[in-house]
Length: 188
Image 1 (cartoon, rainbow, N blue to C red):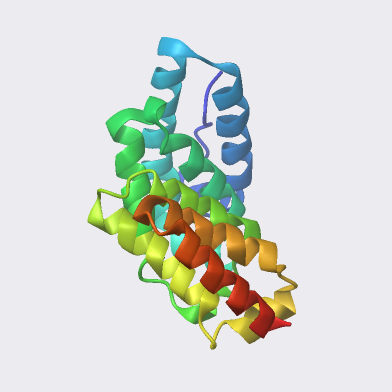
Image 2 (cartoon, rainbow, N blue to C red):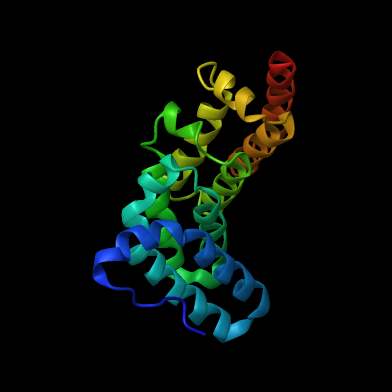
């Protein structure tokens, strides 16, 4: 099964922004189906395709509200079977996430935030991944973002998931959980 089609060059950029969801669905489905050597080969090929086809339009896609496809793809690629290629794509995504503003955060699908934080948390020894996860938590808990997230209809569960994802690899789960519970009461 091929991961991509070769569209005409004139429409390639527009189609790639529209196809991140389809690409993510293929990666997710195949990730669940494959095991062992085939699994690793598939994820490494998916990482190469994601890097060349979807990363160039990352910020435009996020501004257009298409964060879910990137989150689920990063989640699959960041696992052990994704090998170095998957970790590199994850790190490239996290470097872009680290530079996003509060405005962009309001455009994210809320579940995508916790998936990104968990994906980046798998590689907490890499400074860029650690900073990206921390950025997500800080932005999601900041007073400037709360009104944006409220309009989007978040639940405190999403905020808790994001915080616990970062806490798990920092080793401060109890303290952050208590802090998040306090923060959640402030939201109500």
